[in-house]
Length: 436
Ligand SMILES: Cc1cc2nc3c(=O)[nH]c(=O)nc-3n(C[C@H](O)[C@H](O)[C@H](O)COP(=O)(O)O)c2cc1C
Image (cartoon, rainbow, N blue to C red; front, side):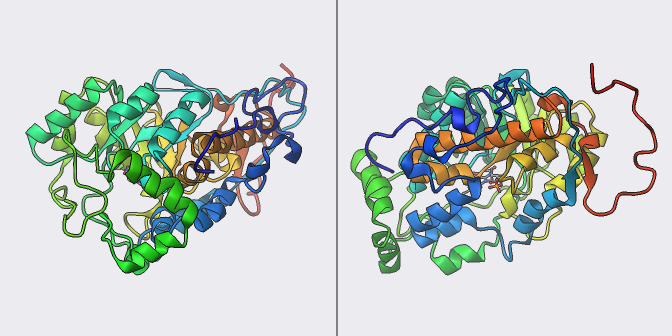
């Protein structure tokens, strides 16, 4: 699927064009309506299984893996099971809509694409595939500071894209990067704070992944046994665009992604403190989002220092092993900051999980890996298809629990898994509250 013309993704069967079609057929899906080559991809987890077969082992390991024993990754993913739905019926759910507003903008779904480095190494021009699918689906896409395609090209593809920066050391470098982002048309800047030092990803060492990649016989073999990736992504990229470089870490071009000797600068962030963030706030006139917050007091501090929104995240379990699940701290951060836009990520794979996060206080969520796999497997059409699957699931879940809009969600739509405490439903609700 990496080369040649791509068919348009199916729309109506997944609920993507009209999440609420007004006649009760929300979410009905039929295999016949899905293009043949997407029929093995019915849920987002299917994309991971397919990408494992497509990508060389070190690259698949880099995308799919977490840090150390992957406890953070598992905790984040399983936290959604700690809450279960209390559906309501005869609630008049015709016309259910997944449209959601965030930071003063309207989006067609309550989820976006998380920033991911190196996407163009997995799928041909991966960042552009993500950007164009997000543009067409009217959802946010965040360009990673570690991406391999110049920010300007991605912004040209999707002028509503956001940009995630790793703060460079040195005031001049910082100012130059922010000036460049501004000139490229970025309005929303995301500053990732959860990487003060490099993470301990043993799986990368075991599988032979490094950044930059070191040419070796083993790496050549890993690529050779994945010919669709080799020809569809790697050689096609080299032939048309040369060796990819880190394009967006600084104002100027960074190091190449393949090199025998060049070292990537990972250090230098350990001394960062909130004063550095305040300096960014002073320099950046647009919307400013802090990504990687887990402690409610850091959330308060970020907002006091000028953040417009927060991403509650454990980086998909890729930085520190054994962290709290983002979903578990979400209600506490919501209680601390009732009016601040909160975005949640890590481990979301289902519409039901999106809806649980929104019910527990998130305004929006992000997903990373599934969209990365989709770009790898079939570029923008496959990303559009993945988006349509998730959007259909969100619409169906809303309708199934008796709601028509995401902003109607509240913690009352959920109970903790397991026996329910006596007295939970002692208060009857006002008669006809459901029938208005
Ligand atoms: C391959 C990959 C690369 C990533 N690169 C970045 C990055 O450059 N900047 C960043 O803030 N987060 C990065 N992340 C973390 C994501 O933005 C996001 O927090 C995480 O993927 C969410 O978890 P999920 O993949 O389970 O949805 C990366 C994640 C993956 C999988």
